[in-house]
Image 1 (cartoon, rainbow, N blue to C red):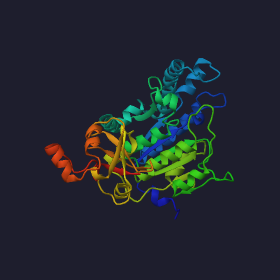
Image 2 (cartoon, helix red, strand yellow):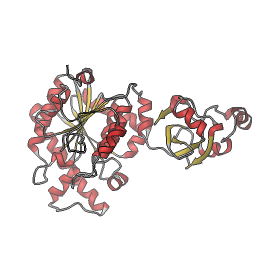
Image 3 (cartoon, rainbow, N blue to C red):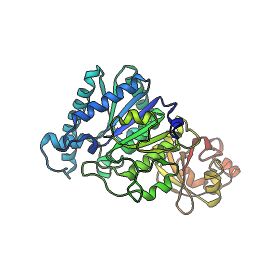
Image 4 (cartoon, one colour):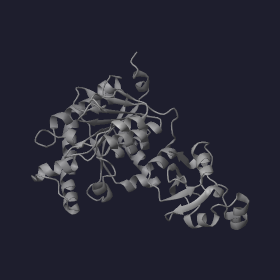
Length: 370
């Protein structure tokens, strides 16, 4: 039996991300034949009972080709205008690809704020599930036309990180990142078929990325961390491999498989691990060990400092005395109250705050250890 087979036996939901360069032909236009082939494979997966959600890059690349522009603009407004033109073209191409199968496509455009906001994060999951129930195919892209940090700072890494967040929102069993190389390559340029330790894999990362795309293997490893730490699997593979999606789901030796951690995170923990924090709490060495290694709640006594302004219920990072990230979690206190109670014992906090006191600044049930 294939060493991969046990990982794929229970896959019922998959998120597939396609990069800009992969979607483009030699003239840097959308490759309609390739999109049609992917659509055909998605149909077969759905016939097997595997719900498939696509995360598709390509809006800016499509816009450049549509407008006859030789290179990507540097002006933000122009770049967003190019994305607006290209996004329409991109969805037209996907609609055409699925039309022979009598399947409709649904467009979902996201910004990072949609992930950071808990309510919108949950609404995203509900919407995608509803689209599947209607028999349509969800196609997701970041909203380049209105966002600023994603398009400039590349926080989604050509949709690699976005795809991981979508997979977490859906609690998908598998994330597939399709690219133009056959997975993670070692120092000799050979494909690594199985990754059990992402920290070791990071040593193999090369800095190259395509002129059209914005992601590299580094962003794919970040995506792998999110997915595998949540207890699911991820594959990076060459999207031009014949029948690539079917081969992956059949446990074929295609691309690089990132194996999951032993424990699955629940929906709440997945969001805590994915959203951006509003501030930080600095703790002493004892508290760092208690939270990071012993799965204990964070108490006021172990806190030494606060960074940033945040309110009760906001997501914060917990950092050790050396600045290393220990965990992320939901704070029971705003930053001003933490400034008042830091370093104090629980009994002192109760006297100081009365009925407003919580024993834990961050409860262990609302913590995700890094």
